[in-house]
Each structure stands twice: as C-alpha cells, then as structure tokens.
Length: 157
Image (tube, rainbow, N blue to C red):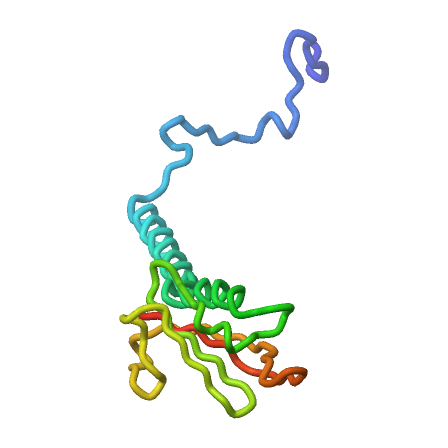
C-alpha cells in the first residue's frame, strides 16, 4: 500500500466540513424568556394607552364644535353680500341649541337669543359654563358705511 495517496472512495476532508455545526432542535427556536415577554407586553400596553389618551385630548371639544356650527348658521342668516346686517339679527334661530348671538362693531353691540334658555349677556354668564365661537366680519353700521366687527355665538356646554 501506498501511504501518500488518498483513496478515491473516501471523501476529501476540507476545513469547512470539519468544523462542528450547532444544531438546534425545534424547541430551541424563537424562545423568549417569560419575564422579557411580560415586560414587552406591558410596554406595548402602556404605549397604546398613552397614544389613546393623547388622541382623546386632541379631539375637538363638543361644546366648541356646537358653537362653531351655530356661528356658521347664524352668519348665513345675518349676512347679505358678504356684509353682516345688524337688522337681520332678529331672524336668528339655531334649531336644537339655545344660542346667544353677539355682534360688536364700531363701538356698538347687538345681542340676539334663539330661545328663552339661551346664555345671557357676557356680564351675567359664567365663562366656564358656555362655549364660544367668534369670527371677524364686515358690518354695515350705516348706509354705505361698513366697519370691521366680531360676530360671536355662545352656547351652553
């Protein structure tokens, strides 16, 4: 027999095939410690809770949206050609909501209420109990004379 020759029926040993390989059973795959999994669940729960709280705080206040809707309806009623006519304040109606309407322009103030339970004048009502929406408008104070003013809708919260 020759000692320096490799037999043809034996595979050649290479460095890559002689290294030991780690074998994992299916039970070892994707395993997480129970404590780490519990902490992860708590963190995700807290994050969702904080997100929901921030989202709820960002939602518009229902009283303010009611006041804005009332202001939109009133503005359509009292405006003629883009100019508010104070004489049309008598026509103010806000179905379903008792609303007080205030118009201030040129040092004058006009008040109107859509019902007997509407909020009173600014001096008599509590600011915490009402929602207010206001908008800058052009007001006709005399024939051919317009000034800038504020149209305000006030509703109970």
